[in-house]
Amino acid sequence: MRSHGVANFPDPKVSHTGGGTQVAIKVVGPASSPQFNAALQACRGILPPPSPADQAQQAADQRRHAQDLVSFARCLRSHGVVRFPDPNAQGQLSLSEVEADGIDLQAPSFRAAALACIPASNGLLTRAAVLQATSGNPQQAQSGSSSSDGAASGP
Image 1 (spheres, rainbow, N blue to C red):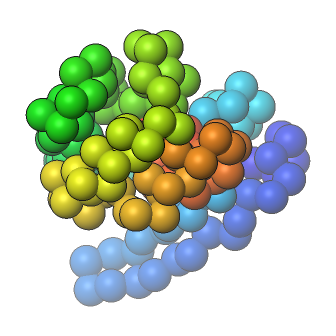
Image 2: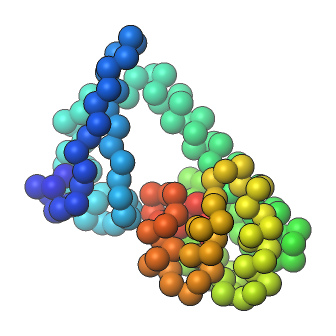
Image 3: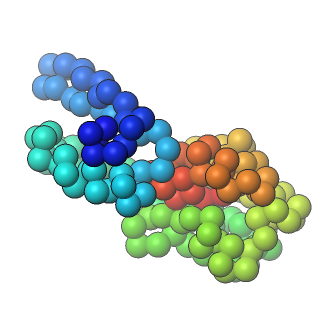
């Protein structure tokens, strides 16, 4: 990844368990940039494909992530943010998509609703992530969220 332009890509963490070997990589920063995706495609064949159990777990995690975002969106709508969108088919929701729907992320009423709805995200969102997303500094918010494209986990 580093040789393909992702200079700050971390070393993988390898762990061995009774059932096999697991490789984990914690990606820091936006994982949806064209440069990151190009490097990922170039390096895709280096690691073995995930096992069927890993694929099933990943699919379950993605469904849970999307469900938690939908729950957060419904809560916001019930708190008066009626135009707040659901995540897309991939379970993602960016700050720019939210703003494109005419939602002022910096409005005190939005911040209050978002803070009140954190529990609806079932641990996906934190108070810090909501405060960053509503601070008026989207770059800071993107670096502080838990999703791969920065704001995928919502405000």
